[in-house]
Length: 422
View 1 (cartoon, rainbow, N blue to C red):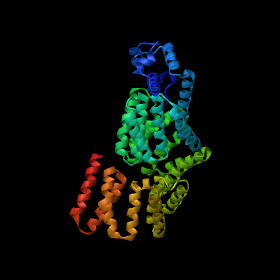
View 2 (spheres, rainbow, N blue to C red):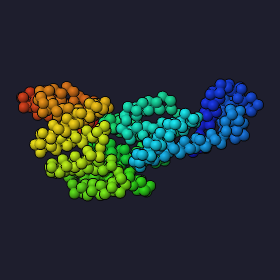
View 3 (spheres, helix red, strand yellow):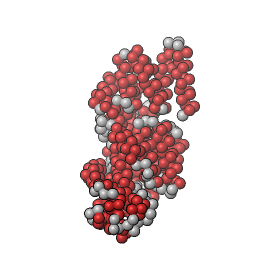
View 4 (cartoon, rainbow, N blue to C red):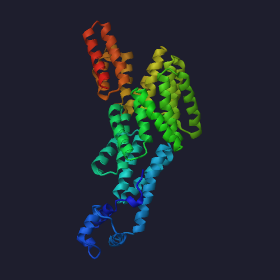
């Protein structure tokens, strides 16, 4: 990801150091070069002379070699942070992030600082800290308008990740497609972008494009021997098998991934795979086995994270199908407890579904009112197809049972219009 030391924005470094020392262009250039030369140098309008650059650094009382070494070490650490995140090496990720925060104030090169903030965005997204991610996106947009093509592609891709995590897959796809275009036009590595496209298309149930991008990403990751990313691609491909009811093939992939998760010590990958096995057995109507896998998946998830609530939502679906209502209430209360404790979970789409289910067991009138006035409009606004169909069909069935066909048809019309547009 990082720029080489030769492509540092040397002119901006001189500009920053000059202003820190309270020098005018006339004062700094005196006896070294013309004011116009310095001005062009600071604005990157000329190729600088090594000799003049050294004299400028001497006048600024800066050790040129130490400055370059410091920036190179910083850039290496930013690159390492990105690698640790990809490797799911959480201990080294935290240590590297902490070290970078201690070094960044000494860095004068805007390209290096831009790389740092883009990688910081990647760090926040990996931790699902969406509030900090949004703040970082806004900061980059405000202060780093002139990014390199590589930085622009990576930043746009990460913006897509942000919206996809929030459940706004349509907006996420816009960013991913833009990142794909930039990367392909400039011969940049597109493996991660392909993976994100495959994952997002999978989440909106466009299996053809999901498999297309996941398989292309898998080939690129295999050529780079990035086995952890290969596992991520296999998870996408296995979902198509589940949706096409090729359950045996999907089950084999999941069991293979669980073995690899043991070798590489990947608790998050294990959690995702166990969750997916729970979903697989839910689809084959083996609800007891489904419940077991969802419960095991929760052991590897943090209650502070959204995917914990996701697993509880699907777990409750399996329990309801198995008429284990007391257990449904237990898990709903558990989920609501963590939702109330963690502010960022309150606006999560599956939190709305958990609250909806709780009303179902407490007060049926509130259940319908909450579904109609809060949950359904919210799901339409974030364009979550699967849940829109679920809640929309619930309301249609309810109003049909009351012979209120005009009201029922209204929801059917909204759903139909949504499907045509999306």
